[in-house]
Image 1 (tube, rainbow, N blue to C red):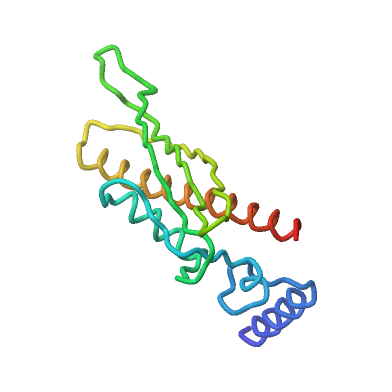
Image 2 (tube, helix red, strand yellow):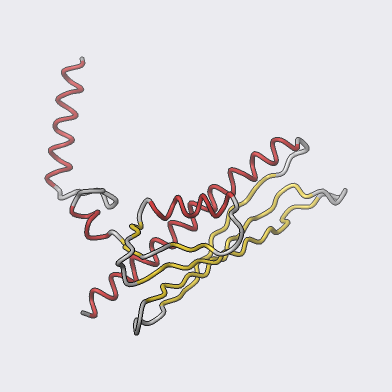
Length: 167
């Protein structure tokens, strides 16, 4: 039975490599090298919160930092909490976290400043158990940081592709 699994794995690898598949975030692959975004620095405004740490961690997996790069990335995040479901006793049972992220690519010398905004949202169910609610909030904030970093990476890649096509 194990030889059947080995044959299946070899066939799958042959099929995938034959179609030109290359992981987009490959550290040394051709796709990873072409799509890597390089900035001088990543600055996230505000105090060092858990969300900012998670956002930065999500960004540095796809963004290289090089002191010689032309642009620095500056980010400011505004997180809003909105009540969605309120019981007759005025208890909140569900709420949203929304991250409104403004970013700027600040260049050196005469380089133009490129800016934009992304939005990400996640929901949380509140329970009567404080620990469960706090755990849900923490998990929701992690999801929000991941979604925000993915949207920022997408926006930066689009900017990079536009700049390459204009050359």
